[in-house]
Image 1 (tube, rainbow, N blue to C red):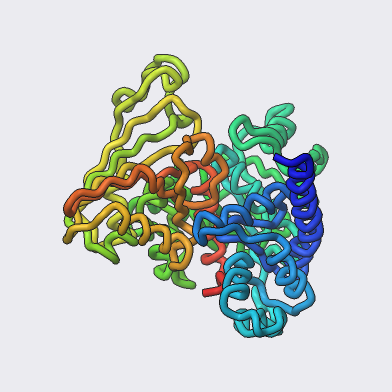
Image 2: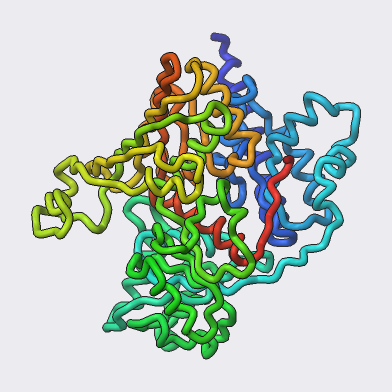
Length: 478
């Protein structure tokens, strides 16, 4: 190695850092001014650090065989920042690769106006929606983070209040502290302070009223200026017709449940059957984290190859309903210490798939093993298909699906041979296909799908919430 070689690498790194730093304010302004979120091959750039922006560009190599240089992408970001745009999610990475490979004869501005004609020089006609979080546990606090993360004039889902039981001395400070610090997902990205006199939490400029109530119908949201709110129930207490009690509260307009529902309530897995959400639907379920993780992959496989039958085995992190040490529990085995044992239990996820994918009704069985990890789970899909396939064929298809299909926001794909569960904390996808673990023989396939059963699921809940609120953000390029 020559003496100048280290200097070359350092200079290259500094150049990438500078370009990433120049991108950050442009990315922020595009969101604040127009509601446009930029991603690179699905990896979000909004509120990303310079290092995260660099890493997102390097990941393009996994799909294209070569990395996308920031100096190649920056002119497109700069050109976008000078356009009038309607709200959308734009994959600037895909646009840059397409431009470099196929449209070098055009100016960047002309290329973007052609590719983004659906949103260039279009007005934003979407109205904001008030949101109330009923419950403030694991999912509730992550939903709060996701909603606060988008605070600004273009944020259409506006977190106005949270509802909790209690109200004892110090309760408000404890609620704020749990939002501020999280043992799994890390510190809150921003500033949080408490207004004790008004019983409110202020996070990144977002004023959140804390309402203490024991019954949903007892609340009058209108006295806090909240109208026609979307109430997201993340308590898990009501799972059937009792959810209608929320609609008796003044100022409540619709209800979204963050758990599987009973009765005739629609269970929605976003990306799969969200077209079932009607403007007149008052109560919707976002199904379970496991159902959200497996259904998109099962749909992709069934659409392409056809599934005769299959078994789903879930290796799931322990949850709050288990005991830290051995103690009484009404469910079988769950009374045993969660941090010390693998606990065999049941799951309704496989059966619940049919609510989103009726064509798979009666074709799936399922079981679950709770394991001593606090977050990130895995679903093992053992499928018998209608025809023979190869491992390479299946992986290639799922890779393409993760990038260019209508399921690209739900399915992620990794080629890493070293990835483990903790690497997936914070994944925004419903599920991540571990391609290196894929098995195939004749017409049998075994797929391993990771999922952040807290954060990834919460992202799916927000997508359902946007749909219920009548908010449509096209993903471009199509």
